[in-house]
Every structure is written in C-alpha cells, then in structure tokens.
Image 1 (tube, rainbow, N blue to C red):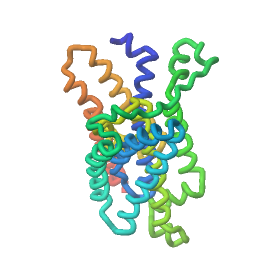
Image 2: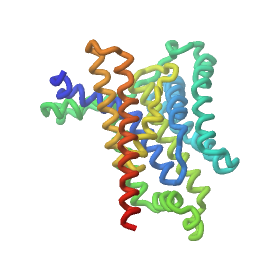
Image 3: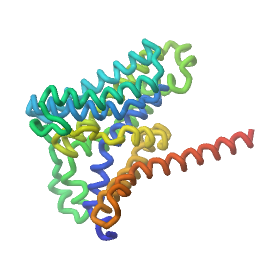
Image 4: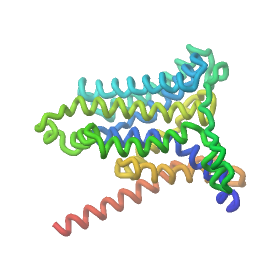
Amino acid sequence: MLKNILSPDFINAILRASTPILFATLASAIASKSGITNMALEGMLLFSALFGVIFSSLTHSFLGGLLITMVIGGLIGFFLAFFILQLKTDEILAAIALNLIATGGTVLLMLAVSGDRGASTSISSVSAPTVYIPMVAQIPFLGKVLSGQNLMTWLSLIAVVVVHIFLYKTPMGLKIRAVGENKNAAESVGISSKKIQYIALVLSGILCSMGGYFLSGGYMNMFTKDMSAGKGFIALAASSMGADTPIGGFLVTMLFGIAQALGNLMQLTTIPTELIQMIPYLTTLIGLAVYSYAMMKRKNRLGAHN
C-alpha cells in the first residue's frame, strides 16, 4: 500500500479529487470576503453538473458547454444575491432552499430532457481535454504528474493564483474585502455594499459552476443523482479552515483530496466500504474541530493580553 501512496497515480488521484472542491472553495472565499457565507455551494455544484452535460451535449463542444454552464452559475449566484440582499431573506435559509431545489430539481430536469432516472445514460457530456506536455512528460515521476492532467484541474490551480491576485491586488478585490470587514465604513467612502455583494455572489456562482462541470465532464462523462455528494459542504469547511483565503483554501483542499484518494485506495483492502466512504467527511469534522479549538485558544490568548 505504501508503494501505491508514493506513486504518481496517487498524486493524480489527489488532484482529481481536489479539483471540484477547490473551485467551490474559491467560490466560498470570494463570497465570505464580501461578508456573505455562501452555503448554497452544494446546490450550485449539482445544478452545474447537470447543465454541463446538457449544454456540452447540445453544442458538441467542451468549451461551449463550459461557458454556458458558467453563465448559468453566475445567474444562480445573482438570484441568490437577489433573495438575500433585495428580499432580505436569511442567507442560510436561502441557501438551504437552493440546495433542496437542486436535489429534486436536477432529477426532474434530467427526466424532462433525457427521460433518464438516476443517471443521464442517454446523453453524455463532452469531456474536458487532457493536457499533455511533451518535454515535461519525459521527466521521471514528475512528468507523470504534470503531463496528462485534465484541463479543468489545471484551470483550478490557475484559479487559485487569479483569485488571490483579484482579491489582494485589484481595486474590486479591495472593495470586496472592505465591505466584508466593515460595511458601514465602506459605504461612508462611497462604496455600494449591495452592488459589491452582488458581484461577489455572481463570481462565486461562476467559480462553483466550473467545479460542477468537472464532476460531469472531467471526473465522469454523465450526470448522476446527487453526484456532488457533499463536496459543497466540504468546500465550505475548507474555505473556513483556510481563513477564506485562496492559498489557505488550496492547502486545506489538498488535505481533503488526500483523504479522498486514500479512501479510494483502501477500497482494495478488506475494510468495509461504508467505513471507507466516511473518510473524507470524517476528515472534515476532525479538521473543523482542530481549527475551532485553535481559534478558541487564540482568542483566549488575545483576551488575556488585553
């Protein structure tokens, strides 16, 4: 088993498992920086996975399917913002409603479009291309990791850098952070907090939709019922544990990717499948417990100094 863990295939498994969670983690980070907790990531992933199959199949194009899915993801983020900011709906209740609608709505929509139940067997998505790097592929071990990765995995890694630069090096990123840290202070210098939070949630929806597209167009080439399997909630935890920063979220996401890859590897053993399936979620709970304890100790230390 140790030999398998130290192999390039295991690293590839980590990256594959991390890709949809990483997109959703970045989506959560942008929303959180604006002062809104996007708990609708699970529903966004699920809707995007289905729309990815539908529109890549209709356009016969990976790029066409991805772009349309991203537009729809942005619209879902916009409607979530409308309910929270315009109609003053509690953000947690709005997110729960969206997640519940996604659970039943995707099955109903799949039935209406393809006549399938459970899995879209009659239509399949156009899979994201694999990126081969000829020169790098010749390098022992590293070549097998870097060359041959799914394009969406590369995009998720690039997105970490882009979101970091966006949040910390651009005027819009500064406004998003200003609104999240102190809405009243931001508005006192002429920043429209509502407009900024609309933008943040739309961007959050777009990023999350890319993770959803990977589920049905990279991880698999079809949609299956509830295929997000809690990844939206894991991403929410990863973002929180990473202090809602792109780099921190990336590092925590890799931890969950390792847990998922280990779970897949342990399926070859005699350990019960039900126990193995618990590993990613158990890792999330343990991680959150450790993080919460560390934050509590830090607050107590700061309080003692004051």
